[in-house]
Length: 548
Image 1 (tube, one colour):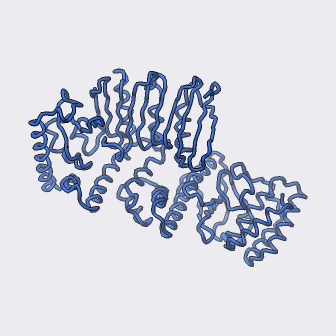
Image 2: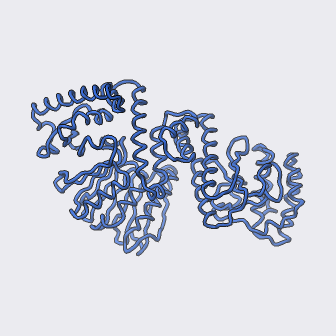
Image 3: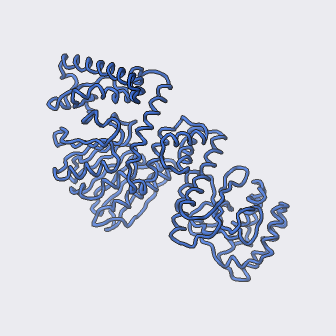
């Protein structure tokens, strides 16, 4: 595949509709993709649109820069030899990929193997394995990984031996040096100080490992069959002794470790023990999230959501339960995280109560986000019987363009969670009575990048921006429209629409007709809750030839 210089071509194949999408991004710097742009693209497009695809990113030299299989489950990167010196590590990790990430040098040698899921690997959650690193880079990489909140970082030399390891301060970090899993022999090998074995049995229990070999560095990565029988006997005896001692310590000292030991002693028990484990996991999660710095949270706002969804999936049935779990975490999280968790679960659990819950959560999310952006007092309303429309009513306009852009972008992110939700953003000096159409309510403020309740295909919402000339519409139109909406007289509504359309044409208010179509449709549904059949009639009228 030939690609122009200084350009990147991304081919996305979506098996759902058998379509091939090609994108050209001007994001190459000297033949290499800018890390921030790459991670931003993967995060925003693939994750938010749930694309199931094979993705190949090529440089101008026809080398595969990034290949991703099945969305973002796997991400292989081929780059130049000074990979570590660039910012690839930070940016790719910030994308929050759930799965394996492998980094290769230009010779195809595995340079970095990154694991970010407890479900797909026995390695600890958020672990990083680094291969073939120069000695002068080790300390900086270790420091960087710990600042990012990773529990454990492993440095492995070219022979597969651990060269260095470090652990972030966690409730259990003092109990071990490092853990290595060898997939070739399916053997779990540990290098432990004998004084730490007792405490470490508790950690092993969390993953339900049945057999563990305790070795020194000379037998590291040795096949399980090569281990001598005496060593196995000593190992098993040591583990059993460790479990007994841990149980005794936990019983007398009332330490949280007791919960995990119960899980280890009864590895095949019911769901009750899973909840016990969940309680202790929440404590660990609290400490991990508290270590995340501002830049990580800013560039990867979904990281906390992912953790919460992972913990709560399948275990909640109402918004109140989500609030209780969040309070248990004792984190400064906004209510928008409730929405994320509820929506994620709603994909697997259908039900009217759940549907209403995440609609409510979305409204909370928008309210809190606007409160953070400005001092506006606002109300968020859910109109129509199907709860498929959100109306955000600001108390005053946002004159700051930067603030407005930030607000609209954030609200748009929440809208994407619910595909059938349409959002209106309006402002008014008076928010007490939204069921009257007046001067204050007839300005749709900053409609760009939102979904709308309007005749299908009437206009491209991504490019729509309100024309200020629309303010010159005669005042009697609004009072008459209010009366028509209350009476639900569709004939009069069509007549009023035609009159106003002629006025717009006479006054040369180009671009206002489509906005008018959208506004009338919204007004009918919002103020009168007109049923779907009536909206279809209105849509047909708006789509008639005289409105084109």
